[in-house]
Figure: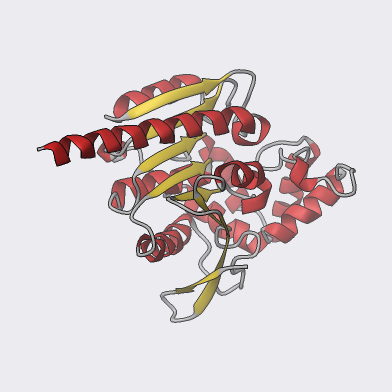
Length: 291
């Protein structure tokens, strides 16, 4: 399995894990908080690897990527590590498309704004621009002791609440059986240790792209679930209007984790978007060469 070495500000070299399959232009996929690459993107890898070189990293503190307690697990740490991996991949391929879901969408948009030379097209699924709407909940989580935080997360698991609402995903099915809530909780804690989760939680309140979202000039597809309580439809429409080259798709009968519950529809929209923008690029090149 491929690993990419990342040097931290402390000088320690850490290993960022990623899956790789297929050939062609790179399709770079970013998962959300408390998830991992295969949990979210297994069907995406199967579909898109037929036409693209699919690269799917585990974010720092998740899955098989580095999880040592000395690391600074945060949104900025993830952003820095992902940018370095993209810079490395850019040397191998002139064209990189990026797809992000939830927290991964936040990172993808930040990359599009601050490093537009790294990617060609951007797909943002269930994007957060900031976490202010969950400010009270985040502040309460920050104040909890490790044991109390574990209990608070367990309460979310019992109700299948975000970010633990993927229990029924085929990724977690083992020998044909869906895991019970307690087993799923242990799986999630193993995937993303509590100390890493606390680092991310502490970084949420200072993370915001609200003031700079208009600076994204790349072709962008926004996908939201119709019943998304984290990022409501009115917010999605307003967000699409702020970007000069954005297109919005809303999927009925789905919530924040639309990328899990409606993966077939999401894949269809991503496919159409990438093919259309590739077509436009070739049309522009033909006009250029005719001149």
